[in-house]
Length: 405
Ligand code: COS
Image 1 (tube, rainbow, N blue to C red):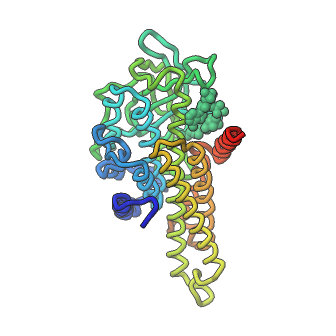
Image 2 (spheres, protein in one colour):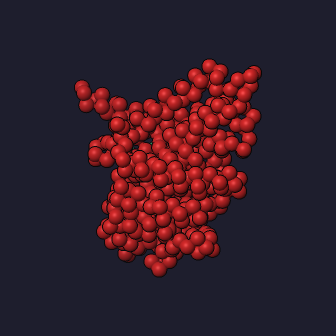
Image 3 (cartoon, rainbow, N blue to C red):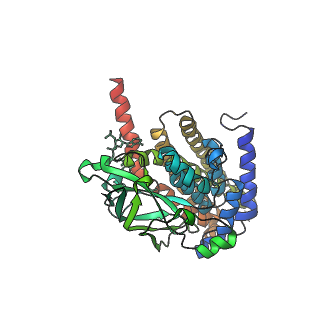
C-alpha cells in the first residue's frame, strides 16, 4: 500500500525506468561531453507519450494525472537530468500556458503537435534585467491594429534553439507594473531542421512562423548539457492579436501560476537526481573494498547514505503532497516552493556526498555522479532560485498569520 502511487503509476515508473536503461544510459555521458541535444531519444519519448502526459487525450496527450507527469520527470532524472528537463520544460512551461490560459482556437492549433512530441515548446520570461525580479520585464509589445509589434530579448530559454512554439511575456502597459504584462505565442523554425527530418519529428511550418523571432547563441553550461538553452530574440516581431494568451495585463500572474507547477516539476527532477546519486553510491560502496572490507561496511558511509535516504523520503512527501494539492485544485504555491527548495538543496548535497564516498572513481566520468553533481546545481537556480522560494514561502506565512488574527 502506497499513500500516493496506484498500479497505473507503478506501471508507468517501470516503463520510464526501462526506457532510460535502454535508451539513455548508453548515451548520457557522450551527450553531456559533446553538449548534444538527444533528438533520437526525444522522438522516442514522444512516441512513448512522455511529452504529453498530463495533456487531455482529445488534444493529443495521454490524459494522465499530474503525479504521473512528475513520476516521468523524476525517473528520467534518476538516469539523466537533461532528458528530464527536456520533458519538464516542454510540458509545464511550453504546453500548459496555452492549455490553461489560451483560447479554444489556440489550444486546437498548438497543443496537439506539442503533446504528441512532434515539435518542442518553451516559455520566455527571463530577460537581461528581469531574472528573480520577473516583473521588471523590458520586452515591449505595442499594438498595431489587430497585431502587436514585439521587441526584446529573453535569456536562458530552454528549447530556444530546437523548439518552435513559445509563450512569452511582454509589457503592453508600462504604467501598470506587473499588471501591464501580457502573454503571446510566438513561433520560429528549429535551429536543427536536418536532425528533425532525420529522426522523423514534425514542424508547425504550415501554421506559419512569426517573423522577427530567432534563437541567439547557445549557452555552454556547467550541467544539463544535453538540454538546449539559448537566448530568444524578438526583433520587430509582428504577432497577431489571435496569438495573445489570456487577457491583457494577466501575463505575469499566469506565468507565476505556470511556475508554481513548474517548481513541483523541478522538485521531482531534483528528487530523481538525488535517488540516482544514492543508487550509484550504494552500488559502488558495496563492491569496492578498502582495509579488507567493503566501503559500505564502514559505519560513517552507512550513516551518510541512511541520512540521504531519509531526506529523499521527506522530499518525496513534500513533492507528492504538492502534486496532490495541485490535482485537487487547491492552493499549492507555498507547498510547491517548499518542495522545490528542499529537493533541490538535497540533490546538491546527495551528489556531493555520492562523489565523496566513491572517492576518485566518483570524480571521474566513468560513473554518472560527477555529471549528476553538475546537473544538480541548476536545480537551486532554475524556475526560481532557492532565495526566491524562501521569499514565496515567507510571504505565504505572513498572509496566513494575518488571516489568523
Ligand atoms: N499565483 C497567482 N498569482 C500570483 C502568484 C502565484 N503564484 N505570485 C504572484 N501573484 C500575483 C500577486 O498576487 C500579485 O497580484 P495582486 O497585486 O493582484 O495581489 C501579483 O502577482 C504580483 O505579485 P508580487 O507583488 O508578489 O510580485 P513581485 O514582483 O514581488 O515578485 C516573486 C514575486 C519574486 C515571487 C516573482 O517575481 C518570482 O517568482 N520571481 C522568480 C521568477 C522565476 O522563477 N524565474 C525563473 C524562470 S526560469 S523558467
